[in-house]
Amino acid sequence: MVQTRSVRKIIVIGIGAGDPDHLTLQAVKALNQVDVFFILDKGEEKSDLVQLRHDIIEQHVTRPHRLVSAQDPPRDRTAPDPAYASAVGDWRHHRGDIYEHFIGTDLADGECGAFLVWGDPALYDSTLGILEDVRDRGTVAFDYEVVPGISSVSALAAKHRTGLNRLARPVQITTGRQLAEGFPEGTDDVVVMLDAHQAFAGIEDEDVSIFWGAYLGTPDELLVAGRLADVAGRIQTLRAEARARKGWIMDTYLLRRDRD
Amino acid sequence: MVQTRSVRKIIVIGIGAGDPDHLTLQAVKALNQVDVFFILDKGEEKSDLVQLRHDIIEQHVTRPHRLVSAQDPPRDRTAPDPAYASAVGDWRHHRGDIYEHFIGTDLADGECGAFLVWGDPALYDSTLGILEDVRDRGTVAFDYEVVPGISSVSALAAKHRTGLNRLARPVQITTGRQLAEGFPEGTDDVVVMLDAHQAFAGIEDEDVSIFWGAYLGTPDELLVAGRLADVAGRIQTLRAEARARKGWIMDTYLLRRDRD
Image (cartoon, rainbow over all chains, first blue to last red; front, side, top):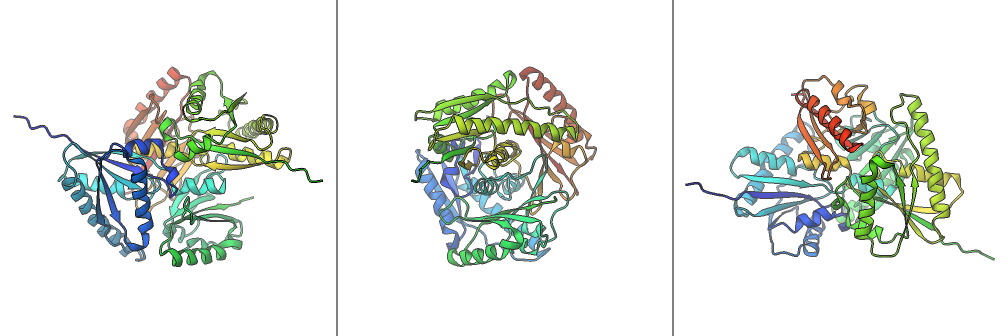
């Protein structure tokens, strides 16, 4: 006798960079296929981010659904290499346990679960990698698909009304940790994400401009653009004040080197 | 006596990579502020792209509006450097003339005009640069803003369910012309756009994988992923067939080098 089991389905939905109107029509349709939303609570200080997810669900989901939440495992973002890589590995494994539990226990056969991801799931987000880890464990079977979202990179460029690349030239997207090792070779346009240490302040090239943004698309949005040498100090001050006031900050920036 | 003139406003709206549902809620709201849509007709072979713009306007715009169209100036995309740069310059200037006419003649004081841009206006699109050129001419005064869109890069990654970067590592976005000079230094993840000559076929590294997509988000979508050495030929065949069938192709791909 063949036992038929309907497969569990997961949708990873990019919800944009902070502005609820970054949501795509595709994301709204996807939200309305979901039985269970999985929410990771990142603790007090980022509770407005969790609230924004709840607001999106409340505003756009018109069918019955459940919310299941868990505490996001703590993560040491300040550890130096190679402790950093190890800390990330531990955190990822712990998060994998949570996902496995979500999918295996909180989702019934044939149901659809969803993770709502800030920005675009393809850029510096761990959700897809962790889902692959969980699939590799072989303990729960599921299919998944991805709905792209407006990244903070796109939102930054739009607010500054600039392209990311210049004509026929490349652009690199990288991290604060990488930038701390120097301006990347082979490109004069560099977008930096996940920079907790303001690595831009270590760039001493006189010909570099910066387009900086924090809390993009939200009422707290901050934007600064100018010659790096002229505005780096102002950005550091603004950033420290905002971080103290809100308890957290999400920022990103484009560095542009003028070779002429 | 002070003469009051209401300023003309332009919105550059990213409409996503081909799937009409890539449209964001912000884009739908922006579409409904527009008095005049400026459409550039790229000729017979790309008429389905123009049609998709018309469909989006028809489906989402609920207020009275006008459509103004012009023939996109021809562009020699096959010229070798430096003739390429010069051909682009001529094309850009000619397009600037069209924009200037659109804004100066087809838009009344206080009205809002819009350009609908495929993908994200920040990535390998000339609209923002040409608008700046036209502003610099000083012949017509206008303000403009940008609505970010889902880029073909995001759409590609979502369809292949992969991140663009790997953990804590950079990703570079570049052109086929640049890739033809070799795999960029300093990064093992490279997204290639505007590649008319299948530069991937010139990469001989055994450890490179490719995630390729064409007509992303449309009914004609093609996806291939695998070790570059194994699938490069298949992609070239598929691409040539599709291009012959439809008369045009828009494709993009991610190359990923495995260093381990």
